[in-house]
Image 1 (cartoon, rainbow, N blue to C red):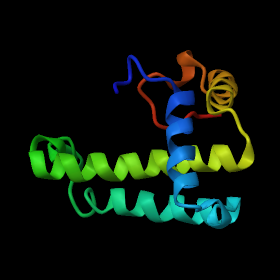
Image 2: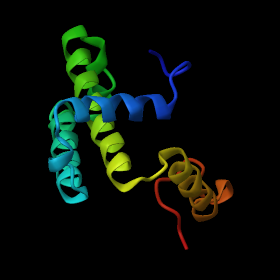
Image 3: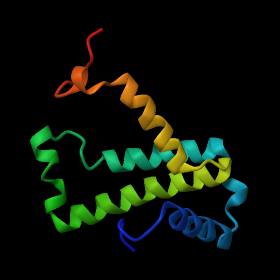
Length: 119
């Protein structure tokens, strides 16, 4: 699997099959999945806690740390897919809609190179 050949639908289906085989749907309420997402993001953040910005760019250069970060990021994505499945939300549609809103909210001429838009 790679980003260039795998669809979001395939990933969601794979996650749904994984969940179904374990009969975990009973635990996958939206509330529980949002809480699980928070936990998984926290586990990912641990790899970057207390290091400066420049050091954070170097984290993935160590193969062991890169694998751990990759695993945590995959856990985050898996919970996102499970949440989309539980809520019957189309992730690609949600992203496209949000990006359209972001284009309006953060116009290039006011946002380029800035972290904050001045009113």
